[in-house]
Image (cartoon, rainbow, N blue to C red; front, side, top):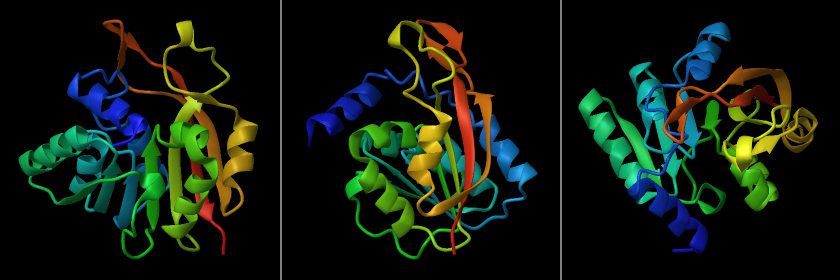
Length: 204
């Protein structure tokens, strides 16, 4: 296990996961409704404890959900059992993972892109290309550099022009707008950092 892997595993085991609101993302829900994204095969990258993966499965999506942390994956599997839905949870490094089968019609992450771009941007770009096909949609919810990080806390931030540059090789931008992350807790207090909601469509 690498130092990076141990760091994420330790945080989930210690419940040091302020990004884990425990509720489905309201921005994900809004996008599904507004853009009429119908149930299909979906890959969630950096799924954490599986709240959004289970929500998508309840909506009829065929979900493959991946995270580095074995603790997070076990919690996700328990949530799926309790909800009575099927989710293909996999403990793996998304940036170095094996094949996940046929390309996905929908790819999603809440807070994975803004971490992965600092670790291995080229590897992340390859993952998006490998697991999508022309017409596939990709929704990323990322930290927004238009708002300063209080005392260095909150999610990693990215500028709009950086996101457009980094994701436009294989994808066309459908819409990019600001939103607030749900129910994050910082020092015991609610914290709703500014984010980017970017919906992209794989080029032909």
